[in-house]
Image 1 (tube, rainbow, N blue to C red):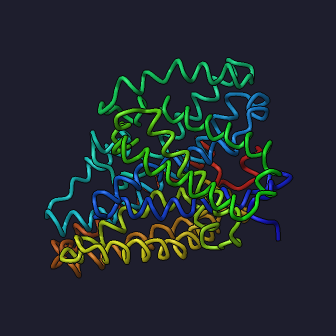
Image 2: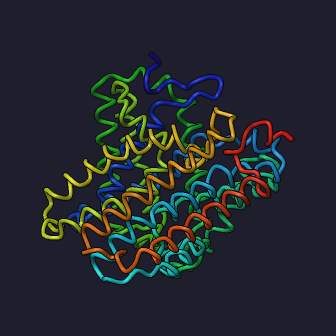
Length: 415
């Protein structure tokens, strides 16, 4: 077994990068619960930047230079936009249930419009944390253009990124679709992650040769500096486009805390749970918030209890593991992956499994928990079901014949 700090050959995943994303996502779940304000503010200082730093650690500028823009856009769309749409549609079910329990009204048109807007500060969407996917998509697309413009020169790329950064800093607390004004700040974090990875590759042997006491002192110093910088800077939120008192202070706090976690994980044995979650953060990002909303709606009396916050976080973290395994097996296109099975009939069965797994619990739970919301009439229920199936079928037809997405049979894709 390779150690966690091994630099894997032949494009294999680096263990500690997956694991730091896995542990960061537990903090993401905590941050979306009724956590104590001070602790929540600290969690927000690093829990999202970690993912952008990790993106930078694996960002391959040389490979980008060899990739045509059309190919890169197609690959990026399949990897991010398609899962974004599917997960938002799947999250309509728990959001509908929560809206019926809390308010008795369901703003379905608002939710559908929110999927397009991608910023719940403007319009509510079924799963608000999925803004991360759109933001990363836009940032990687702009960064691709900067890499091409700078011809792969890292110093020029950093300079161009610095020239765009005021667009984020001068528009704090201003909300735009897809959080587009936050893109320069995200690009800066991706490049910083790439720089940190270069430094790690250069000084890796020195880190490995450090005495345990020195290593622990380094981790403690980084963690302490990160906490102090957060304390002086205040709340940092990419979602709200707020960077506290000083952007550099906010980034330094995130870097120190993230590097401290990474150094600890490099010395620990491989933790399969963290690795698994780190490899499936897209689905976790999409589905965790609706699950938490259902928890808080069914148990409102426990919402403000701190022990409930930790229990809910652990339950949600673990519950999404079988959900992810089922999605990989029966609906890999939801995760932006291509199925190994080329049989079209099997793919239709996969889609029907997703629809059935979505609709059946939906009809049962809404009727059971809200006194029979859908019992207004059999004909209306059948009409709603037919319209829903037609909508999904129409989307499937467009994806199959026009857009030719990744979940098509391989022979049709190459035609």
